[in-house]
Length: 179
Image 1: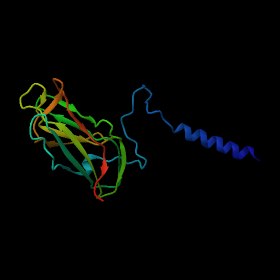
Image 2: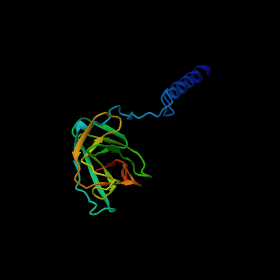
Image 3: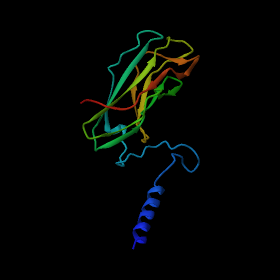
Image 4: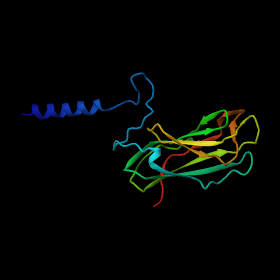
């Protein structure tokens, strides 16, 4: 009689392990889509998005911080990973990387609840080769494929070295907003 419970336990363990993943797809690349535990990825079009008020960098070389608040206007959903942020100039764009050392977070947002993240940037010199003259900011959410665009009014962004295409800017992790 001991064989039946042992077989059931072994079968359950085997099924559990088949659900495990090493984070790679069959082509050997990293997966880029989120798969939240509740099965519903937050979508930017279901969010009320507020950019700012910002702590603007007043002069070239100064740092600025721009908070972005997302309030869920739809059914419960999950944010799992970092927001996608692109800075767009007239003839080029650049995607921001997560802030170094910032841990990714998974947040579940009920309808009416909010999350926030912060963009940090170094202001560039207007007209300089190493500055990205940003016109718009595009925000997307992890695991979703749509974006919202917002006017950028915080001045040019300094590039790393002489490369305006690699801006000295980063995006922080999601945190729960409010109480």
